[in-house]
Image 1 (cartoon, helix red, strand yellow):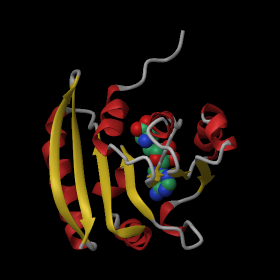
Image 2 (cartoon, helix red, strand yellow; image 1 turned 30 degrees about the vertical axis):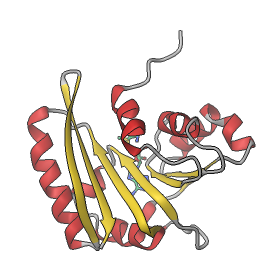
Image 3 (cartoon, helix red, strand yellow; image 1 turned 180 degrees about the vertical axis):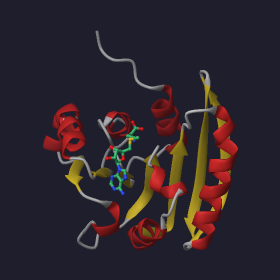
Image 4 (cartoon, protein in one colour; image 1 turned 60 degrees about the vertical axis):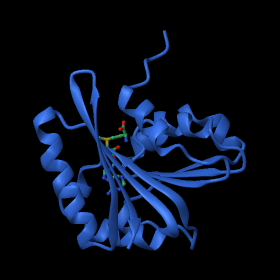
Length: 173
Ligand SMILES: C[S@@+](CC[C@H](N)C(=O)[O-])C[C@H]1O[C@@H](n2cnc3c(N)ncnc32)[C@H](O)[C@@H]1O
């Protein structure tokens, strides 16, 4: 039986709502489940994904082999702070449950500031282990973004089963 898609990833795809020609970067793609959901929404658009784990990159590539073959998705093993994107920039950048953004993300946010288009949007999604952590994590995320070249546009909280989801949307300042 096929695995059920986690609710947070369905929510992330619906919230990102990319246009068909958007160029998207996902940081920390894990098994690549969200990549598959987003690829269905694109026509001429593309998705680039990175993960620092070789194991996750292999799993994400296997899951998305068809879209990789057609050129819609590219997945690479890389650490965000030191990744080289050869001058490519993105309309939409997202990460789901990548903890560095609410911890000490100065280097990572500096990298994203260079990678995001002037009119681009950054989406950071979290599903904290306990619902009580949602508000403090959102506060830390917002403060980190504002201190590192982004302007927070929206903060959203959503109930995901017994958990709570947080999404912060930011624009380059
Ligand atoms: C908790 S998992 C979430 C995976 C996926 N986004 C999801 O929600 O199912 C975090 C992933 O981000 C990757 N990661 C964490 N920090 C990273 C960084 N600085 N650069 C690239 N990948 C990173 C990890 O290797 C891991 O696969």
